[in-house]
Length: 301
Ligand code: CP
Image (cartoon, rainbow, N blue to C red; front, side):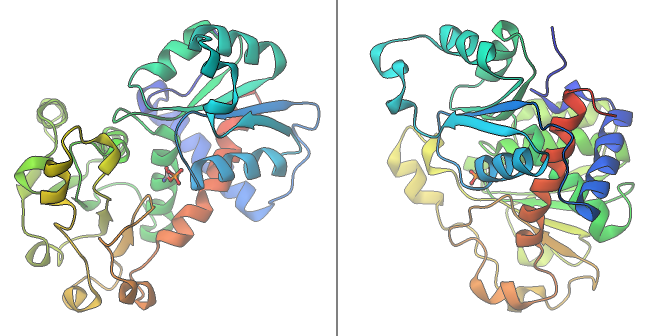
């Protein structure tokens, strides 16, 4: 089976660091011709702005050509074709598949039926490993290290696949976690058990403003309406946190605010003009990191 990126556990610590190093080279030299004879499929069964466009940009910047769809309603899936048959077909056409799908486990399933590498661009509330690698890249870029980071994850920690993947990746680097969430959106027990087994410290709180001063990274997340089965439950928590510039008065000067985006109202626009805001540069980093992931999976060292 070809090497894939479905979960962040598919890469060792050494592979993670290797990909981040390649990404740093691509940030310095953005236009490459490494993949000029390759075709890459970006197939998105769920909405996306950053992930799809940055994977397509990354593919183009590597010299590859891109096919795909952003609305499965325009494909033969609408006639009843299975995911298995769709993936088998697409893997006959291309050299690598990038897939986003709402079902947890769908990316792993796709990797088992595909004959080419598959990158999970998000599978339900489960994993978003390319986001994790760009988050790590951004943390290292802003803090000068990955070791001993004090990170406060805020918002939808129950359904947020980006925090689940990032927590697991950071476990290689002796982090300290604060989990800031209302009761309804707390970090699932399986991830807390994972940290306990690794003796990684974490604290849980529902209060944001009083828990910012020790943070190296303040990782904000959106409450994910699309994961709620009961609309009333979403209404109760949708505006639970709103970070404003005035709440940052005791922040470390080196602290940076990250967010996988899109944001709704969990970060006020006045934060954008502070030196702590780094989420738009974080999204830009996605291009260089995705270039590195694609090149690595296609065997370019
Ligand atoms: N961060 C992220 O996954 O954004 P999109 O949903 O726009 O791809």
